[in-house]
Length: 240
Ligand code: SF4
Image 1 (cartoon, rainbow, N blue to C red):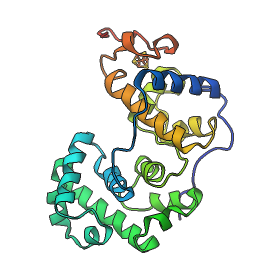
Image 2: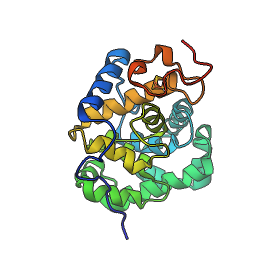
Image 3: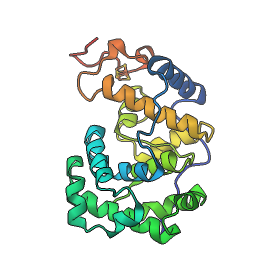
Image 4: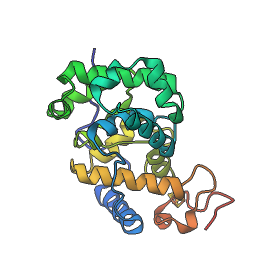
């Protein structure tokens, strides 16, 4: 049975309001500027990158994608025809390479079965039905599915990641241990379904989470959200 697309039609009773979300976005955009995401040249490269970036830094993904490009494997049919072990060698820099080779094969198998490998045809399907289908693909969880749908497919779905959850928990705008879809609903029930906005907002949260709102020793003194954050300065070894 397919999993439902979980986006509540109305806002949860607590959490940030739309003006607060918009204000946070503006502050981040003013501070960091447009992020020009996703870092991938084609929709297929974005799909491949969404699998390879699981549990690793993007710099490792870049090396794996460069290997695939050198081997002329950034092609759905050729990826599908490549034995798992050979594919794993090409993507070794991304870590968990045997697992990710199987996941990549699962994804390209889906792309072939669903639309004959025609990505524009795939993304012509409505979000509400395509997302549950993607979530049934081996190795594709909500974050990977939403990354593919937003960045490769141009669908208005908000990508949540560990940065998003850490930042909004610390801001006091999401409860500790908030689940993926509950966090996603905070954005999607309050903001217009705007692909460009969702794209940029996610990228800006990554910028903040990577360099300022770090797991340990967050740089609150230099953070553009310091004055609205309930956790600001709560860490003993804060850096400026
Ligand atoms: S003020 Fe500190 S804890 Fe709050 S969002 Fe910024 S870096 Fe994170």
